[in-house]
Length: 99
Image (tube, rainbow, N blue to C red; front, side, top):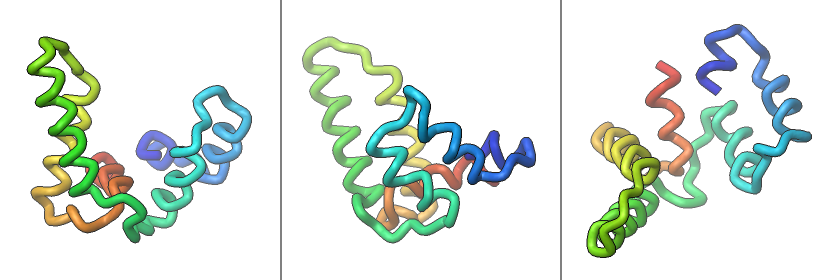
């Protein structure tokens, strides 16, 4: 979304492009409109997503696995939580790159 907005592209065009694209998912169907509207009423809170990502990283460490994507996501969730956004939907993490 940040790239779309910075490039001056109408967000509706992004939705249209994703609709028939292999990257479409249940999450994109559920969260993309919320991100566009900046409606972060929680369906699944950032605090819960952060807890889950930390649990996954702890388990991965015990199993001697590296999860670089999960680690990066957890760091982003932590930054958003530090801003006081923990009670909002986890999609609010999109606001970190929109500024």
